[in-house]
Length: 80
Image (cartoon, rainbow, N blue to C red; front, side, top):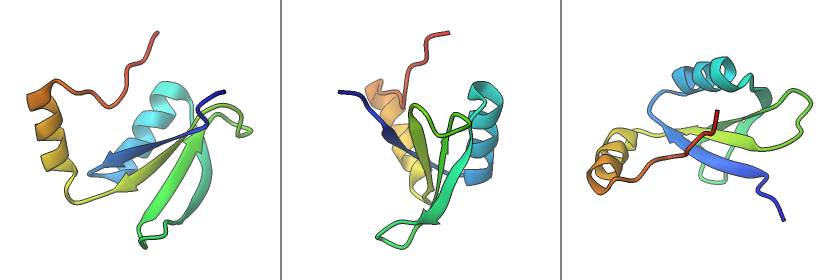
């Protein structure tokens, strides 16, 4: 079993896209609209192998980030 997709809620889609591209070398694999009507980007390794991160912009991300920090929760941990 392997994880193939992960959702990353962000306050700014463009900044998230630049971050994932610069740090991980991800490219846009797919752009679309989710069932709830929100636009999303799927980014991953060139060629689409491995994990794809679906970036969804949401106006509540600021509050979610604040709550996560309060509880000591992180979005993801990367080994370098």
